[in-house]
Image (cartoon, rainbow, N blue to C red):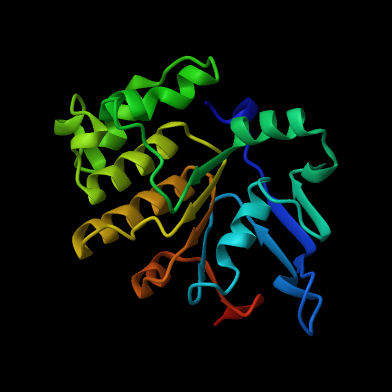
Length: 232
């Protein structure tokens, strides 16, 4: 997946929220994300921190086009993404958004290299093997290129997923707790990789509980009970 027409994109959330409704209990709804606005600019790293259950992942999924907000709009460039039919939204997301999920996202039967190149194969784009090998080398997994993912450690699996996203050169990168399985050395390495991606004009959002993530941020926010506040 190459960057869509070689362009960078601004992601702009305008007064979005996410409510869930209950059938029983004193309160008939609760906010996972309370109304907020946020802009992810090309060339910048934004860090979102907060405790588990504070709404961070919900917000990331809304920005990624995976979860429709209850209110508000999300624009990718000039496009209101949730005004698109599902098929068009899926195509736009596959072209323009690179997601590093919190959960395991590799196929154990495939090798490291095959997992990294899989999205490019599925989207019928020309495989960028050079980019894949560069990111494998940077993330210290190049020597594992022919090893099946089922034989990897948790940290190696995590770095494989990150290399897969970065090798697609997406204009938007959304990473959900990308260092959860990593030691201190590899945690810093991963944050440096996201910083490097931003320097090539990607808009990067990192959801993280790691205090070290803040060292690499242009902007930082905290979520608490669905409320987002900017850190200064």
